[in-house]
Amino acid sequence: MSSSNYRRNEAAIRKFRKELMDMVDDIREIDKRVLNQAVNEGAHPNPVVFTIRNGPKVGEVVSFKVSSPGVGGKLRESWHKLPTRRTAGTLETEMVNNMEYASYWNYGHRIVTKKDGPTKGFVKGTHVLEKTQNYVSKRMIALFKKEVEAVQNRHDQ
Image (cartoon, rainbow, N blue to C red; front, side, top):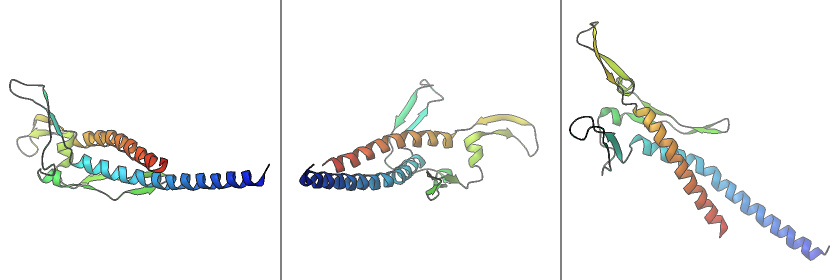
């Protein structure tokens, strides 16, 4: 074996290792960025999607984009994302809402006409938290794919 081939191969391997480690460093940053972006988008979904409950178009699903997705009542304004943290090899964050009626809105509640009176009906929950969780999960897949492709393109040049 000639020493010139050995030196060229050794240099090529060193270069490959350096490029690989640079790529790994870029990928390590993706998970936190993607999680934060997906959760922030989930807190104020755009487009808005709902099913019509009354009128001639009952049951039709309506979807539209709003120009200011942060517009809403006190319940919507009260959603907050806690700081992202790394635990045991995973990345976690939480969405919290400190409005006292948030759980009733999300899970539903019974209707009574007077204190300690009989139950007159039940209001179904909107399950906003579960819908947001599903949206964030789907959005993370798309964002991860986009970010990984960007890293690959950056390092393939």
